[in-house]
Image (cartoon, rainbow, N blue to C red; front, top):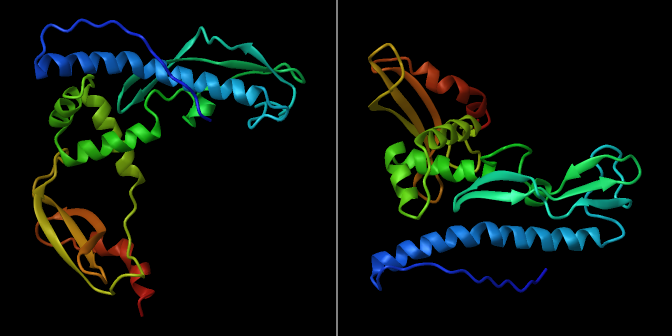
Length: 237
């Protein structure tokens, strides 16, 4: 779908300096962001609702034909955090004429989970930032681009992304690798003398990729690293 998007805003700029113009741009972009999302969503929603058979169905009975507008203005709002800032978007609502069920379209169109303030797409980006830098530094980096974010949101994103990571051997790569203790102390563990142990698999084109991670004593406890890899190791025989 192609659409013409125009916006007219008034903004104060204190001086023609790089700093003043940049700050004005960040304020301007925050104003435009939600408006642009709302415009695109409404255009797509109107286009879909004009079709005889809709690309989405009733959540109750599955009807895709007899759907009517219940609230196309979307007076209620839903909050969604993006890497560009927090969006407050209208809850576009339709109703099924067959069973009377009402449903909101906004999150369905965006392919965002119901009631999730921080969608998976944003979680992954914040998780990468939090893994590459401290939470305080990641917060500062986000702030440089005009919007604020608390460190706990970054921490939660790192935790969610971390739970989704699964290590293992790749049969397409070389049947060899190297294991070593990183010597990096692990925070949040009561017992001292623990470190992160890593096994890397050699790649055919050069370089390595992480195939296993475990936490163990500085001396020994390598079985924790290799136990999850034993099944994969047999496939190389």
